[in-house]
Amino acid sequence: MAQKTQVIMIWFLPLVLIGGLLFPLLGYLVLVMMIFFLILSIFKPRFWCWNLCPRGAFLDMSVSRVSLNRTIPRIFIREWFRWMVFVVFATILVLRILRTGGNLIAIGAVFVFMCIVSTFVAVILGIQTKHRAWCMICPMGNLQEKIGKIRKRVSQKSG
Image 1 (cartoon, one colour):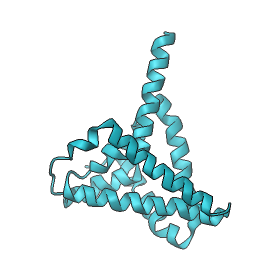
Image 2 (spheres, one colour):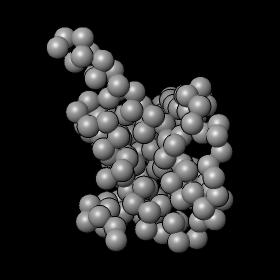
Image 3 (cartoon, helix red, strand yellow):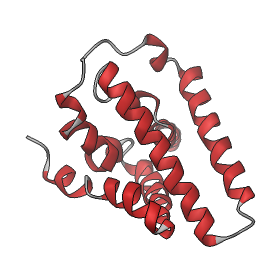
Image 4 (cartoon, helix red, strand yellow):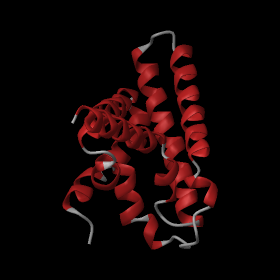
């Protein structure tokens, strides 16, 4: 049975994916969630990923039903690969934002586009391997994990 939070959060995914195509300013929901949950990761690393992520809820509640449940490729656990995915996605995001010329609607559309692309990749990976395979390489999840580790090291040194 899905967690209650997932039942609520899953609705943000179609809101951004479909609603964002019609009203690109909805892409700013992605930005707000990214900022909020990066801050949250200081206190609870990857809490967002496993409890609140709309894409994760979708993968748990939908893709898990059609997943072939195969082993996730070993390369997905390699740190260099996870950072490569992060750099690729961050580069595309920044370049696309720069190309908007500061147009707020176009910037919102960039976030919608990135959400669509990452969801498409997540669904393909989820069907071909385990339903949460994307979560292993998710740029936001990777960044949250690193922020949590940095905070842990800092608190251990000061304590």
